[in-house]
Image (cartoon, rainbow, N blue to C red; front, side):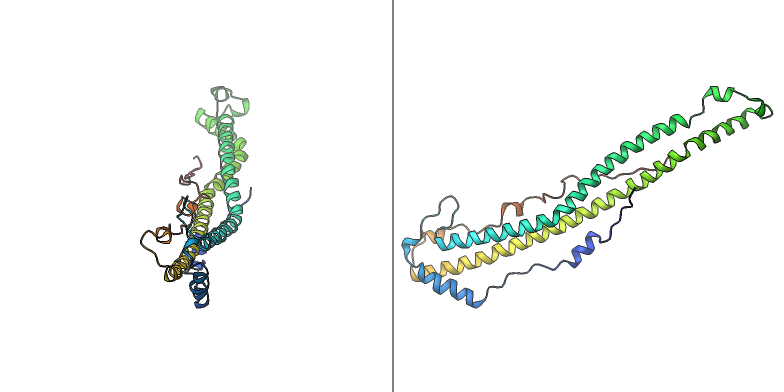
Length: 250
């Protein structure tokens, strides 16, 4: 059976992950949003009452669409990186189930083949006639232990491998948590960036087409990050990794 290794613990990977900061909003882009887009869309007829959560102008909807596209690309990239870890986790879970079943089977065989029956103890060949009952019992037990020794060795090796699986599962869960938290931080930064651009557009609109408090631009819904960013990590099971405690029998 293969030896499980953990070459890069999750906390080391998390510490080496570059922090996600705000996306730069250069002056040239701000001027473009405020003066060019704002001037082009200054016509009050271009704004309309928001419907079904949409933005109240074509330019705002365009920024929202670009934000959604960038967030989707981030999700696809992270999911691609998570795929191998998820596959490994599935494989380890199945391996643990198979090892537990095999260990139970070996244990049953050891108990059956390693038992000394009363018939064995009652049988006294001529070569053992000089031994007392205690000595014959000890001899039968040594013979039984020798018979099952190979099975005991294989079972104990399987138990050691089974005991290492929770550590690797926990490391995988840590890496998947780090990956998803980083993804959530990136899409949050992207959403904040495009929300700033939307606010710049709105200020440009209202400077050229001022309206009252009921103006559609004053009633728009702020951009939100994707719904999956507010949901639990889909790559890590909600239940904690079970502790596998297989101690060799004495």
